[in-house]
Length: 433
Image (cartoon, rainbow, N blue to C red; front, side):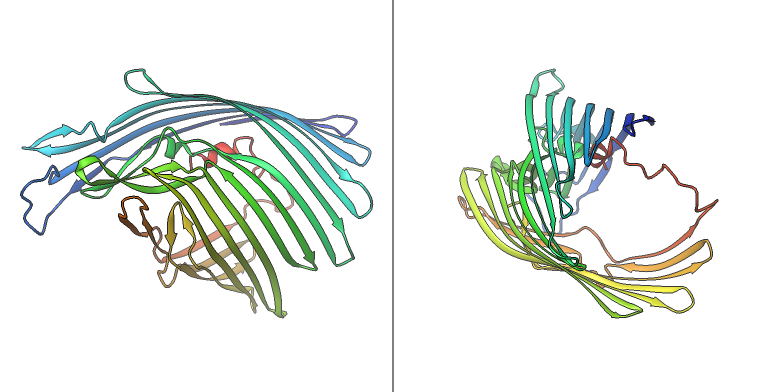
């Protein structure tokens, strides 16, 4: 539910007040039936098991923003209050002698309350005919508390943050420009990662979340050069408390593997990107985007310190065709040479996508296929430097997908719509969806 108020003053300043209430409930009941091909003499693994997770989430976001133009400068200020809470009940039961028995080592309850108060101000405008800038400063304070079923405190944090930012752009010629930016920002863990889930990938391996996750604090600086519609950029970023998913560890003497979401100490990235569009014919355009990465992760794994460095690259290519009789088509895809997945080394993967579109007056129909070659397979490896245990993942997150989409525009296309207005709760939605 969203409420909003906007008022434009005579001096052309603008006031926006908004309030968004988000309510989600996640339930994930799963029943497992285990069949063993070889005789198992001694085991604590039940032939039948089930897991359950119920997580109602409530988020209230209140925001006020004020925009004012002073000469050639644009001034913005605002404040935001976010109140979040969830109750997470996750459990695992084994069927023993036809009776379902709760497994406390895998079951948990957690209740979270998180309050975030933020205020910001920014100023931007033209320093000259060829140079413009924007300076910003944002302050946030977050208070987070998570308790278990015994009302014992698991997490109690009160953390203030300050986030400055600067952007400067200069036009070199009629065809070229250069820009420099630097900023500090925060990325909070999703509610799904904070509210532990239970997912068995086999009878002795499971994936779960982590209510003690810290937010990721990022500092970055970038330089971008544009010539016509071609772009070259280079960026260096440092992430504190980077979040890694599916990090495995052997659990005690059971040798069960539990893969958790967890923080590492630091993650650095040096990247360079080239975006190069090509107009082959009037009816055929190609967009090419290539990025190279040099990355390094620091932290501890079990009892060992790790410091891993890797090089990787991404390549995106898209072909657009304008065809007769209101037809158009696209052939595109991407290739990833393999990089970091937490401490894991990814193996190469990619995807090929196809689509054909036909416009018919106020409607259109699209026939497409994503991941045509079924190559979206995530394979990765990691060796524990302490125990020399080897872990590997082989996961399929997406299979070949075929779709037919029909769109029809009702009413007048000349009437402006407010449906696409950016919500003050956009960041909070990303933490749930």
